[in-house]
Picture 1: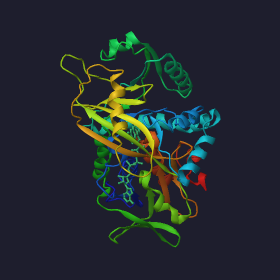
Picture 2 (picture 1 turned 90 degrees about the horizontal axis):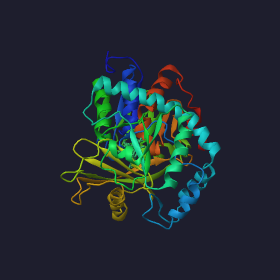
Picture 3 (picture 1 turned 45 degrees about the vertical axis):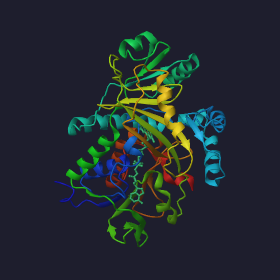
Picture 4 (picture 1 turned 135 degrees about the horizontal axis):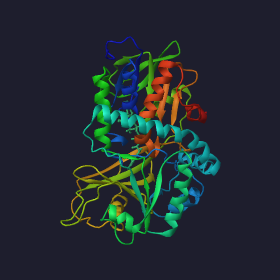
Amino acid sequence: MTAAQSQGPRVVIVGGGIIGACCAYYLAKRGARPVLVERDEVARGASYGNAGAIVPGHTPINKPGRVVQALRSLFNPLSPLYIAPRLDLDLIKWLWRFARTCSMEHLRRAMDVLGPMGHLSRKLYLEFLEEERPDCAARTEGYYEVYRSEKGLVAAEREAAFISTYGYRFEKLTGEELRRHEPCFKSDVLAGIYAADAITADPYKLTLAFVNAARRLGAQIRQKAKANRVLTTNGSASGVQLSDGELVTGDMVIVAAGAYCKPLLRRFGLYLPLQPAKGYHIDRQYSAPGTPPLRVACLLGETLIFCTPMGEFVRFAGTLEFSGLNHEIRRPRLEQLTRGARLYLSGLEPGPARSEWCGLRPCLPDGLPAIGPVAGVPGLWVATGHAMQGMTLGPVTGYLLAEWILDGKPSLDIAPLSPERFR
Ligand SMILES: Cc1cc2nc3c(=O)[nH]c(=O)nc-3n(C[C@H](O)[C@H](O)[C@H](O)COP(=O)(O)OP(=O)(O)OC[C@H]3O[C@@H](n4cnc5c(N)ncnc54)[C@H](O)[C@@H]3O)c2cc1C
């Protein structure tokens, strides 16, 4: 039975990124009737051009020592983490809350939730890839984190040891071992860590695959449909009003509009302290003639640049820039991606890029997503704030919300992710 034939609840989902797409897919799979409304084309927001690394077990950016790093970055517009100095009260409050959660105690609490979610997300991805076989350059053999400095390596080993307590697999490799796997690593790459549990893919094609699978299961996909307002009937969420005045009605609403959720939720008194964190990518034809291409994805440790082979090209993605809700490309920061990558990789020809892009990660100050119901408004749900982990946590977010909506409770305890925690 498809969603169109079922009598399950009609769920209006706002936002056609990986989060909205996965909500639509798992709801349709369970017999609900999702209607996804996307103001642009689906999969064109942050989910379009990210690094495509599904890295379960990844920690949030809130860690001990991050505050000092953030303060230093204030004065260096080329550092991977950059906060454009400006007077913005929301940003100042965000940074204050961020600073308060850069502790080991918070990191443990965060990982107690994210650890199990990562395992389930990986399982769901493997099932999806097996069932749908999407053409999205998916690779399931993990990735390397490589380092040029002893200091970087020591910090990475410490982090890997911590994450492995949540059941994730890591292996330390010497520079020689790394070069045996990937001859394009330069000789001053000292050593690295192999993370076996990661999956990589072209995120645009992967997100589209979820949208298409949801459509096949009966979900309605409405593009060029901007939701201006969440509607309520007798106090319960009952649909959205589009910018052209059309009412899209339903039994409930999930707001999954990435960095753009705030205006839709404000009228319900839910102040989500979301900040957009800009990241960039450059796609390049990788190898010069005679140079072996990069085959497996890698994180260039000290620069935080992620390099992902995506079929015909390699994507270089990274940087975390707090400069407001805009899509302005700061060229020096973009160009830093190739400059940084050349320190680690041989065979990177200068030449025209195949694509240059920036996108906005939806970031909450405690580094955790907001997933769950909005108190006082029955039928209104939120799924955003996935920051650097939206691809990683997309399926588990959609799966758990489908359980919560249809069964009354999710199979993993995600109460600490409640959107209400900021009230
Ligand atoms: C450079 C970079 C690299 C990254 N690398 C990774 C990575 O390797 N792994 C990983 O897990 N994550 C990564 N991320 C993070 C990841 O991209 C995000 O967490 C994820 O894409 C967020 O998904 P989303 O669906 O919440 O938002 P989006 O993909 O931005 O989707 C939100 C959608 O909502 C739509 N929308 C907004 N307002 C409305 C409205 N009013 N009505 C209708 N539609 C609306 C938008 O048009 C958009 O399509 C990276 C991000 C960046 C920028």
